[in-house]
Length: 129
Image 1 (tube, rainbow, N blue to C red):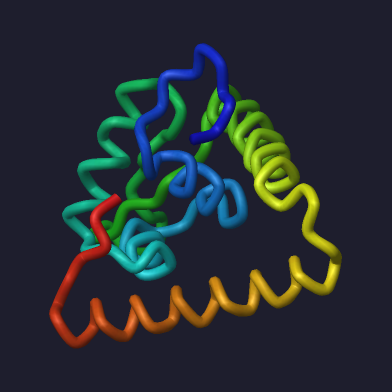
Image 2 (cartoon, helix red, strand yellow; image 1 turned 135 degrees about the horizontal axis):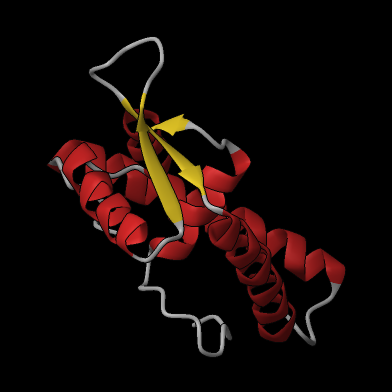
């Protein structure tokens, strides 16, 4: 778990916030695709983040059928804290590893992630947030 102190975010919301931070104004459909989850899962998570004042949801200027997610000032500040916490956690988790071991470990994790993504596609899993 991230060391975010008193921050009240739920598991999975950190990745949603970071993804929005990288692509502020992302459509909910694209967000679901990037996170490898179903659109209803993203809609529910975005509703929670809006209620928490971290995200603003707006209709697309070009397509009224689509909504876009934007970070609020509070959400943007939180993204920075989340990223710092993730880096701190990674440093702690990988302490004592050589650089070569870290690189190998990352490659293995990427392979595991790809394997799980393929399994989810085959079974129709939604990668719940």
